[in-house]
Amino acid sequence: MADSLTLVTNEITTCRACPRLVEWREQVAREKRAAFATEEYWGRPVPGFGDPDARILILGLAPAAHGGNRTGRVFTGDRSGDWLFAALHRAGLANQPTSVHAGDGLELRGAYIAAAVRCAPPANKPTTEERDRCLPYLVRELDLLTAASVIVVLGAFAYEAAWRTLGSAGIELPKPRPRFTHGLEVPTTRATIVGCFHPSQQNTFTGKLTEPMLDDVFARANELAS
View 1 (cartoon, rainbow, N blue to C red):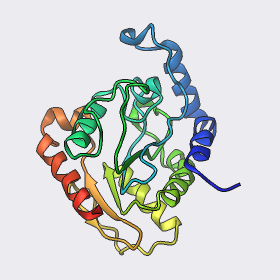
View 2: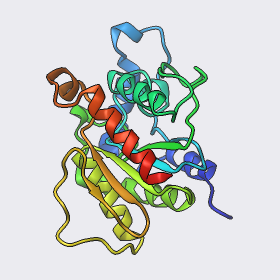
View 3: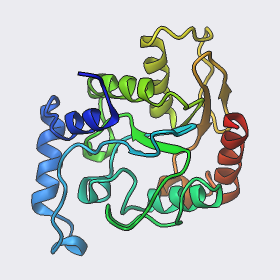
View 4: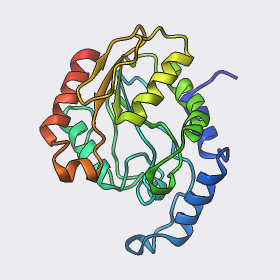
């Protein structure tokens, strides 16, 4: 059977490879947060989302326990997503600036979003072993996103995942690996990696990441991908 993004999505959403993550995501979905007590949580791995002809792949860390793990769509329903999708809209990569739930009409244009780990992890901290079990999904997605020439990595964890993904695909990478920082650019024969601080509340509340900084990243990504 020929591979496809639909096939990868179906396999992701039924994955139970990491016992710790399975237990946590399902516990959160049962117990819920008081603000979402009447909602039915997704409580499964969260697949990638976006334009199959994307020029830009955006890679995050993992779904938020009460964000993607609740809504079933990556970066949807949490504060990080509020920042990310507003920036994508300003950059012309999304048709609207908000992402509230999976049926809210959001469409990405020229962009595709995935996470290095597809299940919500306790304390937002997946292990390297959990990351590596998820990597084959990212390898397949990148192989299918043939137009993608830029990978925007949101944080150091996503950078490491992207690096390992490209390496496993046989892409020659510079040695030593450049240290992650905001605004990092690493050209490779497959895609240019662009670094961005993760739009977590820890970064946005402290001013480590600002809206102009985020806008600059996606302006540069658009420029590289054009």
